[in-house]
Image 1: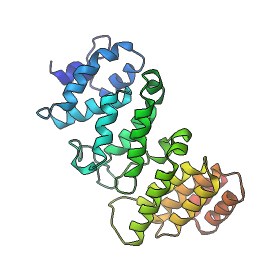
Image 2: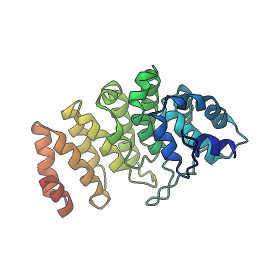
Image 3: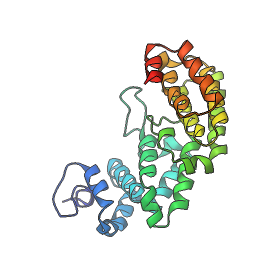
Length: 254
C-alpha cells in the first residue's frame, strides 16, 4: 500500500475506498483524522511525490482546517499558475484550471472545524487571498456563492477592488478564457447581503461592461435581485425583466 492509499484511500475503519472525498468528509466526524495530519503535510510538501497526490493532500488539510493547508494555498495565490497543482483539475466547459474554485468551496466548508481548531484567522486570510485573484482565475461558480456573510463583511474592500479590476480588464479587452462577468456578478451578489446599494451598483456595472455571455451573466444577477429588499434591488429586477431572456424572466418569477 502506498502512502497516498494509506492516507486517503483508506477510511477510518481501515477499509479501502476509491473515493478520496469520502475519506475527507468522513474525517470531519472522526477525531482520528488528526493522526493523519503530519503524514498528509509531509506528502503535500514532498516535491518528489506525484502532483496529483500532493493536491489531494492539500485539499484534505484545507477541509480539516489545518494551518499547513491554509498557508500553502494562500502562498500559492501570490503566483496562482505556478502552483504544483495548476492544470490538474480542468473545467469541461471552459477548458481552464478550476482548482481555486474547489479550494474556495473546501475552505468555506471548513468554517466550523476552523473554530474548533482555533484557525479561523488563517481561514479569513486564505479567503481574502482567494478573493483577490477572483479577476484572474476561474472559480467554477464557487467563489461568491461560498463566502459567508461575515467573510464578505471583513473583506468588503477586497471584494470591491477585485470587481473593479475585473471591470477594467473587461474594458481593456483582456481575454480570460472563462466567463469573468458572471464570476464578478457572483461576488457582487455576496455584497448585496452586506451592503445592498453597493452590491446592486456593482452588479449593474458588470452588466453594462460588455456582452452578458448569452444571458448567463444576467441569470447570475437574478440572485442579487432576489436577495435585495430595497429600491435598488427592485430597480435591478425591473432591468433584468426588461432586457433579460425568457430564462432570466422565469428565474425572477420563481
